[in-house]
Image (cartoon, rainbow, N blue to C red):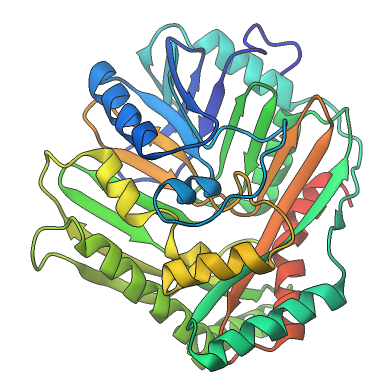
Length: 400
């Protein structure tokens, strides 16, 4: 925020929907943990950081942190690449529950007021374009389906990117515009070192409350219609779709396996399978997988057992990630990573960074990743159209 007193310090706004907590706003930095390229020692360092401070922490995990967990290559780093692991103990923390304001740390209210003021500035349209052609996308999907036919994988989340160059973007305004359009439950905003993450995510990666872990993978997407009868038909077709339910089921099985690595024996359960959820711009199938853990379990052990989330990789996870690395034509960066917070008690809530914009202010580069699950039942043309559907809300927010 150019006119904010905290323009050079981190700022987070996480209006996650939760029964346990309101929307969170945090800014400033008392302590920072940052790693440009994560490795095994980095994860140990992050755990030490969490245990040393036992305070509110806000941060992100970029997709390429995967290479510190599994033996998978990284894309070459560029100067504008955000750090793969970034967590901060903020100076100021505010929780908003309806009309109630709860100050957890510092004096956040003046900064909250500045954030709201920044969002009211005017907006000039920005046009972003796909970095790959339709034909290139279709060729890649056909090639990935050949891997499925050979038995290399069952499912892979293949993504494409849109980008633009615009040096005068106001990130806080863009977040307000996107949040008004998407109205998604896991939206969030973060800024650090002139990288701005504007997320309209509907997907929760993981949350922990005391000894309970919840994961809510999304697989299955359909457009909305302005005609009520047709909209209900589209939603019901999605709910009954063999292809979409198969995609969701494979990721649920993967998540059950990931959680079983640290869960109490016999506690992993599927609370909701292929539940139909409707948002302003799309319908989704969302499953809820849960488990119980020992309260003494380390945060980083949970993260290393589950990251990257299966909904953004495929199954088997390692094989899918290797094919993603081979076929995708762009570095994912923060896209398909995770943004969230950790409480002083060690609870946390983390989203999946999808339906999101990453903006690097000095270069003016804006990037948007979109993608979907490729299975044996996938029609490449329809998968391409699904990517356009997922990018539509962001394009509308940009003024296209």
